[in-house]
Length: 198
Image 1 (tube, rainbow, N blue to C red):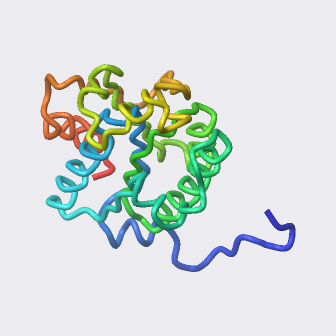
Image 2: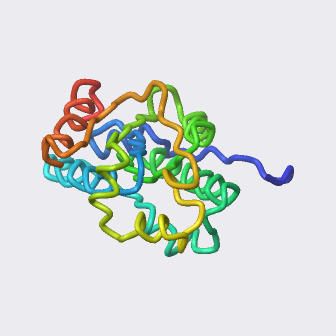
């Protein structure tokens, strides 16, 4: 970060935008293994919020890597930088008064904690989508686990790169196939309603 930059506070602030949007903004951070259902559940949550007239934006791992983070690979250093950039972008969306949904494996606790530190207390809602590895492998919508097992993909989370389970997420959601994505999403929306984000 340059020493020659100063954050400029504009007259229109987050509270003005939240009032206009009729909601409290926050960051719903969906984390879990590949194939755990993060993106699917985040998408259903966004659909439900949209139906309630709430302003949202969903940041998805593959979509972000196709654009802003297209220069990054999957080494530990690149994963850390990927999450750092996403955290900064998410902070801007929250400041814009938007309920922001970020669906990323984000395997390291320290990086998730760093994103939390970017936001005001209560604005970072860690949603751990907890699915057993064998369940994720059986889903394998992109065939990535099979490629990782064969050695075609290196540094794959859950195979030859670690996933650090959240220690105290705001929401710990078991997604082992016993509940539909819609049922799981309802839990997230209820959390937001109970805490008066919506």
